[in-house]
Length: 124
Ligand SMILES: [Zn+2]
Image 1 (cartoon, rainbow, N blue to C red):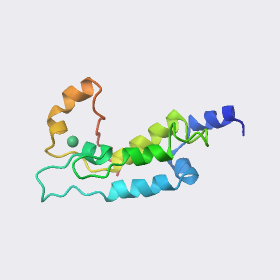
Image 2 (cartoon, rainbow, N blue to C red):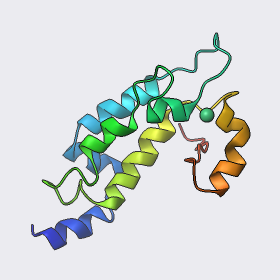
Image 3 (cartoon, rainbow, N blue to C red):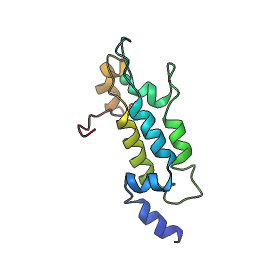
């Protein structure tokens, strides 16, 4: 497979194909899925969990080691499309925000492009 062919595959890759290429993505997904919104606490923020703030280890930087520009060894895993697929799949596995500051500020921040949209998929 040459680089051009691999890039073309990267543009229509599915999550299933991605985790076959990089099983550590699945581990990260399972970890995100296992993340619980502790109702004993006053709030939960998916973005804190994702970016790694306020006692959360953070998923994004760990994902970035597995996929995207850091993966110069693999043109499929290194593609922007593959990165986006992994990003949305793992991010959406996290619980939704509850009573956090971005919950209130979301409309403004999303409109200005400063916050990832935490949308409900309804399928998981
Ligand atoms: Zn939040």
